[in-house]
Image (cartoon, rainbow, N blue to C red; front, side, top):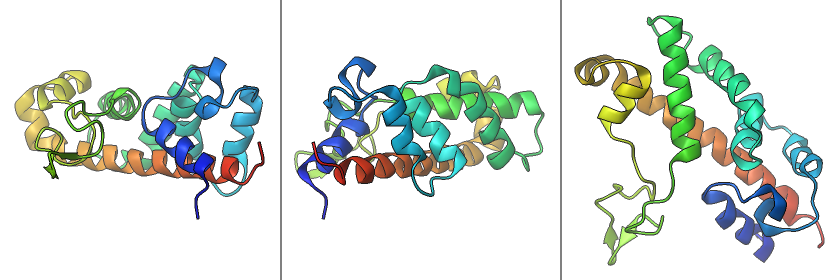
Length: 178
């Protein structure tokens, strides 16, 4: 059973990471090293750990190593030039880090008792095909024909890694007494 603190942390982590001066989830007095230590406890895979440090802890220096991990683990079999795979990885990482909650449904995926049509029930504000194509550096037609399916799979996989990092942090902080 998740404690109130765990539920609160999960809610806080769903949006962008809180400012570092507030501490994780608004808990004051925790150092960046303690927060990173929480991610380092247990069996968290390297990509989830990197995404956690970059998104949840706001460590900008983790961005390039995470992009390289994404390219080596998720795009290595794509028959596309490496610089395009790097662009796709950077774009997908930016989408999960910068993409906020959908304002109409307040991130719930439901509006007026029905599935929110603006976000297709995900609770997230989705990027347009045009924006993603320009981010990767391809035209819209090429994106839709060659990239879209792969890109969506990549973003979904990165979201799973993000959720692992969030759950890991919640478990760690829920087990502590404050």
